[in-house]
Amino acid sequence: MKRFFVFVIASLLFFGAGISSKAFATEGLKIGIVDLFRALNESDEGKKATSELESLIKSKQTLLEEKGKKIETMKGELEKQSAVLSAEAKKAKEEEIERLIRDYQRLMSDSQSEVKKKEAELTDKILKELRQLINTMSQEQGYTLILERAEGLILYADKSIDITDALIKRYNESKAKTK
Image: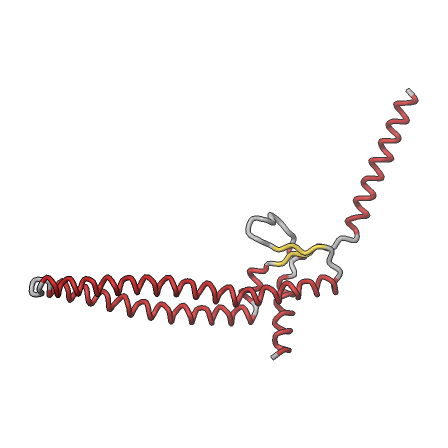
């Protein structure tokens, strides 16, 4: 019987010590959440990068549309003239159209690659600066942990620990100062 009471008392002490150490550990813990995707898109630099990227995409689309119309025009001309053209002339036009189609496809592939490269160039620079600013803010404000709010990774977080707005504001201010 004495052993049972000693066991119960020891268990309560260990259990109580465990609770108090957990409570103690979380008292000094300061956690923040940042939505880097939102910060990237809503910051002034992010908006400028998006505008620059959209401009590049529009210029590439215009060029592709012009090439596409030229191909369609040549196909139409070939259909109209196919009865009148000699076999050699018809074959030459078909080869010319095929060459233009290959050029069009190559231009489309090159344009997509260029847009992806430019997007990476613009966003990587901004994301690097945002991460550096997050480090600075976390040290200044005493954060123990800052998590990135990514699709599906964080199921719930109280809005009071979201520091995205403060990050955007501070990033915009830092960029305004450097200009």
